[in-house]
Length: 148
Image (tube, rainbow, N blue to C red; front, side, top):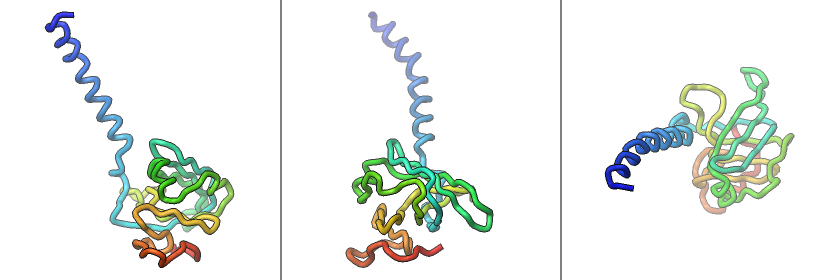
């Protein structure tokens, strides 16, 4: 293939690669969440999928807005396992308290920062799902009633 032909192929493919990269970045962006705020949500697990590229949870929540299924997302599977998550830790029907960064638009859902289920706590960045504050080493096991 001549140099001119190679340049044409590259020139034609480059815009497609740029658009693909932008779409991928937008899909995995966390810009929709407000990480300056933290809210603890309590509910019953409907589905909890620790997968890549990010974890997804559906929790039945009952509050002043009524009872409904709310979708949450979180870190990748490797982040969950490094934070102490084990397979089958969370099952459908379990009561769960999730500390989230809420959606900026005020809608249901958020980004999982920590959670407590069946006496086990998994927190990212050392955050407590009970207080939403950084844990001091050995200061809190995660047991107890999370705040609303």
